[in-house]
Length: 509
Figure (cartoon, rainbow, N blue to C red):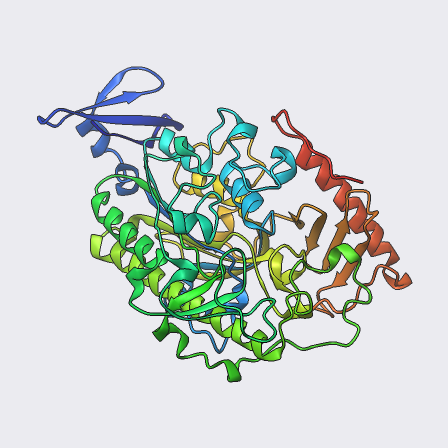
């Protein structure tokens, strides 16, 4: 027996309906929440096709992906034709920000609908204990009659450890109708492997953990986790094409180790990889807490190994892009592309040598900014430069599918931007990394380390200094702007803590 639901309008009132197919005879009864019964034929006869066939949701998320590595965002070396095709047919957001700059808090945030400092989740755990019986994003769709499926990493999952084991990580079982993991060999994959981090003499073999390792792997796409994830996602699309579904597809590349079949490495000869500009004294005006946890210096990566890291990262992105293409092709083959919302994003950004920083966690632009593409049937392609947050996905996609937009959610419905890309619904975006906070307006980026700012502050004019080389905190000409951003921070923290949860953590002073 399978349930599904949709919304109809009765006397200008939106009414949620649930349909149940009983037995082999195919008898259908419609139960209307406001009371009474109506025949299925009567309902179908008076409704639009979209009401009879609810929109599906295909949510694709990459891991540790900087938008700067995608050709649809301007990269001229790393070509991503499949993600580019999606961008051409949907709305590409240029100012979308994560709420946590590493996997655990970011994923817990956009899946729960709460900011990290509302749930208290700044680590690598499920949001379930913090939110109690409140529905996660996927669970809200499940409760509304959708089949909800997870393939690989949606909530936090350890990479590479959890992928090697094939375990569930910090998943939330109640969110899903079904869930599947995609085990893979990761850094142990046969092929040509090299450790780049803390290996100045090149003698260290490939190692595990959250380490910069490049593997030009033997075999094809299906040897690795993301290839298996794409294969399972394609299978599920065909299996569920005749019912409303929410399908979460989590690719783990380009998260380290940078593992991909050898053919994906060929277009990226390391000697030709360009590195970001190096600026003398770049760290002089950055507070100590603002120096990222992975740098060229503390990883002992010389220029040669930095270029190898960029090449390995691009190969991993190209491999992931190919898997996105397979999933998108399955939508077309199943004949449901015209009734499926597609979202592509990443949990946070990534440094590839900017400021001699590498990886995530930093609150600088490369780490907090994420790619975000949303394609909705019937909507015109567009580019939207307005500020958005990943936490907005839950209410936005609920609205697009005609589901209730829960008042308790801390994100906002930005679906109007899909009709009017110049619409601005946020004055600022907000992100955290466990020791600091970012307030990002259209023009300025304000970073505050520790809630009372005892760890220092940074202020950047993103119009005149988009690479964030000059901290303006001590510049008298920006004193009024600094005070304005400080006030915005206080207002934002108050708004974050104004929620229906019992927890409200405070940062250490």
